[in-house]
Length: 487
Image (cartoon, rainbow, N blue to C red; front, side, top):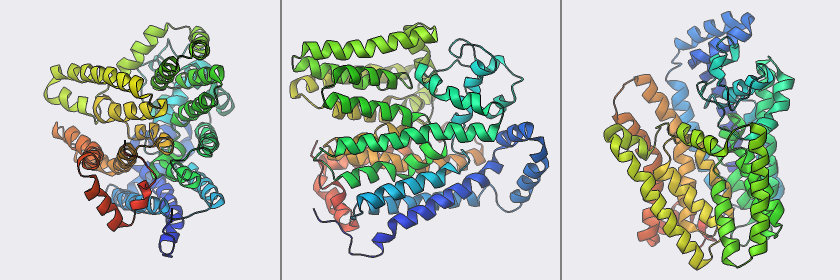
């Protein structure tokens, strides 16, 4: 395959991305002053900064603090996405691919987690155990209203929805950082960063023997993606831990190391529950090829680790899953959100339809012996587009690292576009927050903005593929999907 690397302007794409991430990092510290809760939390922990923080906020407010950072973020996101797409269509060496990925992550690690408060919620949840000596799966953080870290956090009225491994991984940073917000934030961002680098290595191992995509391009697809960099390294989301373990499990699965595959996937579930879907598809595939012993070994590894974990957590697995499902029912920028807003009784229709579709898809996989990773990616995409009650912008990253591994053109493009619209949704959300209107139309606008382009892309590829490919060719990005299949 010939890469389009003759145009010197195209070869500046990596450097434009560097510049974009520098701007993102700069903007994160400006946007901090638009968050009164963060300013209060920081000033409570560092009283000597109070005067500086609020005087700076007042000063910046006189110079368009509520307008120009939003515009600049949107423009930077646009150039970052264009440069990222171009980088996927040109030849860049393996060495440069890795070096730039490290540079992007190093830059963004220096940013303030302005896109999400989750990292502070992790910190506050862990303090329930490390500071207040209570079980984080039984005692809510709200039980400690005098803890000064509570101002910065969300989800204070629920016990932890993350598994035992998640707790253990953050235990060292919690003990080392103690009451030092700056140190805690750095350490809590380093944990996802370490797993992001681990994911890079595991994906490299998987791609070395994969024919659907060039190794360097596959790595750039994930580790140069602006949403991935800003959410994992900038906001410090725990999703990289889950992604790493799920991919590592799949690596062991492909090497027929059934026990290790089951154990590692159980560890992924002990970060977030969603990889349990991959477990069922892998188990189904083993049963389909009539490998009963392999299926039993795989099942034993998965079940035993989860049993030990829930015993350590001192919670009933059914109660925990029910609580996670309940907390996942926060209606936020999703199709269930629209139904809940305009027709509350219709929300139940979506999970019923999804369950019926899932049963049909399982039958299809059984008959066609589809690769479990492909099935997992399809289910994740459908779940996020139509079923998830709470869609947070970084959830698109659940699918992104799977794309280099599946030979599916339509899923590839649809999921990639979803990462773009999810990133662009942030400035739109900020505009809506500034308008401060209670109109129920706003959730509809958010949903349509995030999900309509990916859905339309999929439908066009499904029914007008030649037309779409002509457009891609005109844009000079037709070889982006040249190696992908027709699924």
